[in-house]
Length: 279
Image 1 (cartoon, rainbow, N blue to C red):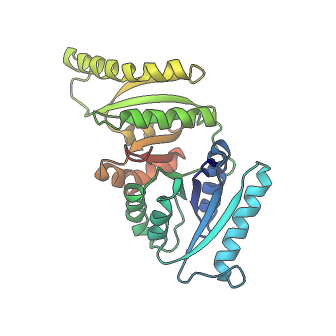
Image 2 (spheres, rainbow, N blue to C red; image 1 turned 45 degrees about the vertical axis):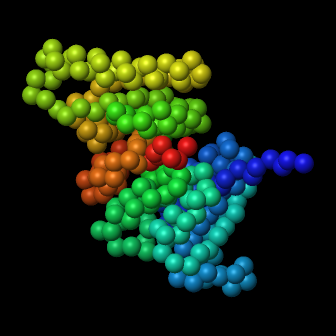
Image 3 (spheres, rainbow, N blue to C red; image 1 turned 120 degrees about the vertical axis):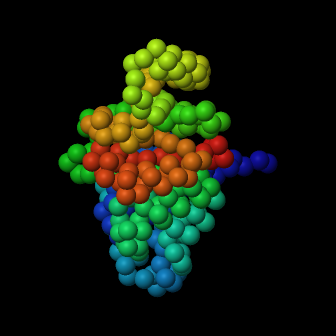
């Protein structure tokens, strides 16, 4: 007799910070939508048993569980305490997870100047999509009802669009697919206009299938002269989540590092990083 496969867990890195708790709350909807468990993972210098857990780990997990229970949403919560570095633990957990989520700030195991580099290591090395979550109490996503997906010429585009559409359905948001081009002196010249037209036509052909499948999701495309960070800086009040590819490691490092961190923080914008192998 065949048994139904158990859904892969949504894993959240817990470190005692409020940012980690907010990441767990964001991940609740992911778990509920998949009918999957939400696993809270705390990396400790030594792994404890249920009777002998390290006090900081137990306190951090308990704090997160209480916040999750307060939502009243039907999610199964699991907890795990592992020995060793947090990033290595999360990468290991990603092999059997459908998503790994971490807070955009926190990771207090590391010096502030290393947070970007270790988060980038997680984003490009994980075996599943990685959510780097930003949300602040009192601000939330009141005006941030748009999901931006950055597309290029890579074969990841279909995967990225699919991930963005699924998030839009889950979070009642619109999708804006952007094609970033290097800024030119004559941005309005005929050559630039024609290049934009061709780029958007290619994107719209990909979007057509998703629009037919999910007509309830509002989807549009736009050519951007500049980069994703410039776009987010100009539209900080409307974007709640950016979906990007893990393929370009330099770009991911820029987004989560010293250059991108302040822009994403000001926009209160989360990142979902995926690649062709993830979905």
